[in-house]
Image 1 (cartoon, rainbow, N blue to C red):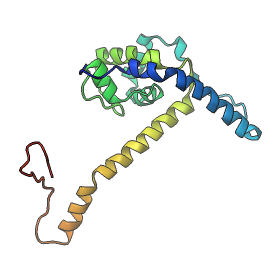
Image 2 (cartoon, rainbow, N blue to C red):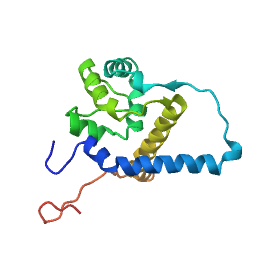
Image 3 (cartoon, helix red, strand yellow):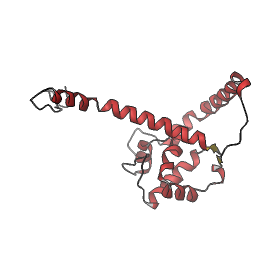
Image 4 (cartoon, rainbow, N blue to C red):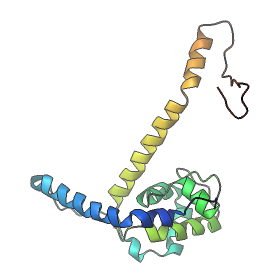
Length: 172
């Protein structure tokens, strides 16, 4: 791990008490604010407290799509997996993991998972993260749209350029 960086477990321990307090406050506020609209409904719940790290690894290996919602439920991103576990270039949306990598990641996620979680909540976490990723990707590719538009109206070919100034290490 690079100097000056903590592990995800360190970061989580720093905010755990405040997060627990806020969680209780938000739950109470939601129940109170929406009291006339609260209904108890049966829904599928995954009881993570009964899932072993080996079971979790098997689930991730056999159904790779579950990695992103599980990681999101733990507030873990691919950067933390790379930094803390040394597994490079993990695409949490479409992971291609060896059984060993899936086991390592499962062991890493397990302590951060809640005792249980509703499947609609997990799938909504994934949906929210996916939408955010796609929006960021589209915003990050704005130059391609500009270049295509310029090329559509010109007989000259335009492409992205990088300009360097005379200062070492500084790009303009």
